[in-house]
Structures are given as C-alpha cells and as structure tokens.
Image (spheres, rainbow, N blue to C red):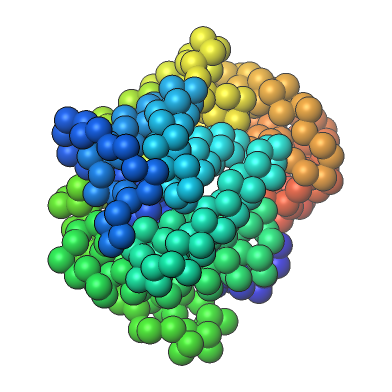
Length: 412
C-alpha cells in the first residue's frame, strides 16, 4: 500500500471508528448491574420504553456478554437466544447474536468465511431498526441498534480494505453517535462515541496533511477532550468499561506511546477477561513494544501453551502472533538457534496461506529468518529468505528491509 493510500485509509478509518463508537455503546449497553431477573411477557417494549432498561435483558445480556468475552460462544448464544425469543421483532436479538459471529471474525481476520453471515445479521438489525423508527421516530433503541449495525459493517469493510463501503456505513452512523451524546451529556457511557470522535478527528488533522481538507466537513475535535471522555467511560460507565479500556489501550499503545498507561489499561482487560486470547496477546505486545522481553516471553509462552492445549479462542492465528514474538525475544538476546526454531514453527503453522496473501506475521517471520541466518554467518541462506520476502505480501515495509539486507547483511 502506498503512503497516500495508507493516509487515505486512515481518514476512512476515522469514519469507521465513529460508527464503531456507536456500535460498542449499543453492544455493551445491555450490560449493567447484576440484578434479579424481572419476568416480562411482552414481545416488544411498551411505547416509549427501551429494552435496554428491562431487567431481563440486562441480566441475560450481561451473562451472555461475560460468556462471550470468555470465549464460551455456545453458552453466550443460548443466552442471547432467550432475548430474541422474548422480543422476536426487535433489533436487539439479531444484534446480540451477531456478536458471537463478530468475535469469531476478530480472532482471525485472515478468515473471511464468517463475513456473509455477519453482514446478514447486521442488515437484519438495520431493517428492524428502520421499522421501529417508522412507528417511533425518536426511538432510542432504534437509533442505538441501527448505528451499532452500521458501525460494525463499517469496521469489517475497513478490515477488508473495502473503503467506500466502510465510509458509507460510517457516514450513516455518524449522526446518531453525536446526537446520543448531546441528548445524554451526563451519561458516562454515552460519552464514549463522542470521545472517539474528538480524539481521532484531532489526531488525523494534526498528523496527516492529506486529511485536513476533509476535517472542515466535521465538527472540530480535541484530543484531550476525547481522552477525558474515554477515561470517564472507563472509570464511571456502567455498560462499556471494557470497550473504553480497549480503545484507551489502542491510543496509548499506538499514538501516545505511553508504556505506563498502556500497561494500566491492558492489565484491567486481562483481569476482567483472563481467558480472552485477544487481550492476552495484546498484553505481550505491550511489553514487547517497550523492550520488556522477559515479561513478554512469559505471556507468549502461556498463549502458546493454551493453543497446544486446545483452549477455545487460542487458534492458529493467536499462536502465530505468539511464535513471532517469541522468536523476536530470542533474537534480541542473540539466542539465534532458539529464535530460528520459533520462526520455522511459524512458517509451518502458516504454510497453508495462499501465495500473495500472506499474513503480517508470516512475512515478517520470513524476514527475520534471514536476519537469523545472517547472524549465524550463513549468508546464502539469508539471501534466499530475503529474496522470498520480495515475493510475499509487503507488510511493515518488509520489502524495503529485505532489499536493504540483500545489499548489506543484517548486523554487518
């Protein structure tokens, strides 16, 4: 991807994040205090009421979401199915059921086999929300779930580099995101979407000149205001602490590059969801980014052990990440043979990937094999690896680095 394309994709990703903010608000808005179930018999809420205020939905939805984050998909689906049964014509059912599909996608974004099912589920949400809006134009439920579904559609289109589809979905979600924050300024959970908007709008305007002409089309953002809103949700919100902490982690890890605050957020996520492999690997990445390789190694060793034990969610992609970073950890300490073993295991694990569609870690693992061979003095083996990298998908400037090491050996 060219530099211009990357910057344009970031601009589109901003729009997607706006939709994502609404999505996570709606998704986790069924979470609340653990209260006793109050049996209800109606198939739809009374006029003016919200299913999100139903004790049945709150308790059942919270249980389902806890199970979902814990990778117990079948049990989560059974919990969500009870809500669908109670409210068969409401968008809440297909939305919650679609979340299990979303997490299956998120655990391995190289696998697109669940995409069609997910798009169908989110389209059903939009259709039901539109029907509800026809009867009740000010329906909070319809606004929530329509924005949620569009936000998730936009996120997946973005992951698939389908930028126009992503932008269109997020554009349709933008107004509900901002409207909800304005109508409920005291609600810490509703500050989340606006916080994302404020931070990323300001970030793109500051860092990417190509984005500036577009920024005038949107309300002005502010990074500190956005961070304050996200922190407020992470600390005081009832519904979406997990999502707020995750987005704060992303920001501190990638853009603010603050080690202490990154650790603070990832430790919260790991304490709340200790069996979630996505957060587990992210904790290892945090320590690796700041050169704390001993801590990172312990975490990735555990990820790999859980993968070999067949723990739910610890799939090949999660193992792929762990193998790559374990190889790097040994390369840093000049333990070249151990490093090579991990990179070779990574090669075997990803051997089924189609040529020209290699994953980030397969490409970077092959590059680092060449670096190991250079360090071992096996120059021809190193050259062979670098040449092969040039035939693979270019991730993280792997092609530039391979050409550099072809001219001058790594460590030379």
